[in-house]
Amino acid sequence: MISRFALLGSALALCACASVAQAAPQEAAAPEALPAPAEMPGPDEGVFPSMAHGSASMIGLEGQEIGTANLLDGPNGMMIRLELAPGALTPGWHGIHLHATGDCSDVGMYKMSGGHVGKMDGGHGLLNPKGPENGDLPNIWAAVDGSAGYEAFTTLDTLGALLDEDGSAIIIHEGEDDHMTQPIGGAGARVACGVVK
Image (cartoon, rainbow, N blue to C red; front, side, top):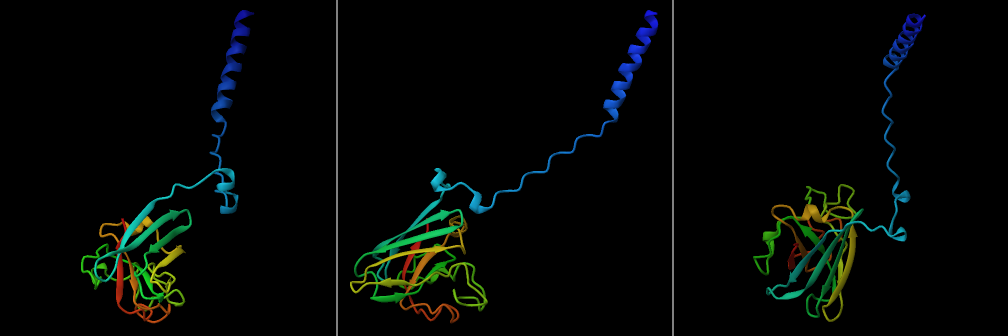
């Protein structure tokens, strides 16, 4: 009698093991989709992105310091702010661009800074259907005393990209950029330069 119960118990145990072994392996759960930007927590919820910060000391035609530039990387682009002292520029509009090389050593010419970041043949200009280039920015306005305050936001580049092996520079031109004419919007000579650090 005992041997029948032992045999029955062993058979039940073997069936249970077999059914566990034959059970299909569970599929891994599909990863949840990332939330849309509107669903992400932001400053109202006390969440702020880690933002990289860069700066440039701006120098004029004679190599004198004329002001500073600050660059702040955000989650969706980069904020650029310049403060220029009285006498820094001639009054009126001036083209301003990000240039591909961080070199302002040829004072008064500033050709060592190279071309625009992301230069494309025929692609210069914020209004150009073939562009814009990554280094294109809105114009800067200088007051009657030659001082200027400027703040612009760009989604065309990041601070990390600007701080590559050969760096980059902020260049201000003598005239305004029409955002269409090749290669620099008719902005003329380079009158100020700052190496982004």
